[in-house]
Image (cartoon, rainbow, N blue to C red; front, side, top):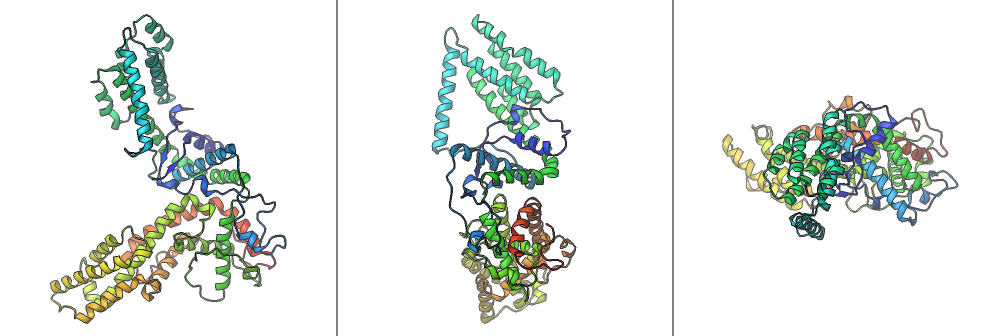
Length: 551
């Protein structure tokens, strides 16, 4: 899982709350426990790092369109030179990106949780951490075992433990707050230490009792286990460890509590944060602009003929002045944006940078793309096998499920560019399954030529130009396009022919794809509209539907 720099969860939530109405959630108010500097380790935030937002030279007119005499096509779609930023600016931008990414992930990822960063046991980071921790706790043990004991560091630790316990309290815990303040009165503790009357054991037992009252049920066993420790230094160390886990539990509970409220206001919040980034990096939509320019050119060229399956090349695309503006009518903004979204499912590895507005969803979209490729090959294998075996064999109970299972296992984790070897193995497994089923049903075995033909047709699916694969791919993409179309939900019941064996899996992929795209369209629709209107409407008058639709 990728790492994201330290950040403060509550500040994000509070920012969203301020933009909406006040939340009535029963949560800790201004709680330091909700503001620990933990490292976030979630796959959600891939692509949200600072390196992805590339500062460029300021442009006085960042949205100049193709038909604008003041801006050339290359200026519209070509990235600009980098501009050096100060360390303070970089820190601010990184902080803004982190807050934007974490709020985005909380809303889109229902399983999102914060986790303490864990280093490899042999890593330099882990060795440094272990060395420093050991030195600190060894020093504490020496102080407590001295004669007379030195309580300097122990008192500092008790102060931090007190703050940690108070941070875990809810506003209604008035009595418990008073008990903690009274039992861990730091001024009294210092006086007792000066007179040699400090009862470390008694204080730690009170702390453990309070932790038992505050911890989640999953931590009960760990808290109870601490009561058997007799060494004060070891006990304090374990108290800090378990308190850290309790803080993380509180953070994740708070995230679950605010998720519904965030969903109501995240569009405005994300758009505001993104605009703040654009104010600091005014020309940070170059890749988004190029992505939309390519989609506009494709839709414009294909508008007078049946649109081919969108393919994204690896080379940068420059919008030509005549590609869009030479027509008397122009495509609608929605059709261009939908084409751009569908092109993301064909994004080649190593291709130019992802659109800036989709960085936070790049990992999710790449997972969808991988699943679409896997389903395409699976459906093609099943279709070829069905044509060769006939409906009787193909309709045998469990036959299709077994072929799907074998194909999925052999394709797991492979990119579409490395499926040749997998299809070789798949063809062998399919042939074995076919032979086994023929024997069970009492049919004669396939001839050698028929076996060779079946294996050859399955292996040929590795070629992207394969006719069966191409047809399946077109149907899958056409079906998935319904999930990103505002009026396409009603047409999802018309399932494409030939895809019935993968219907359940394809519906799930479509829902995931549609969820990501719908949220992205809501947040960044105004930016897309501003870019596309400059691209599509420089000289031509739009028809009744062209260029005036809303995202």
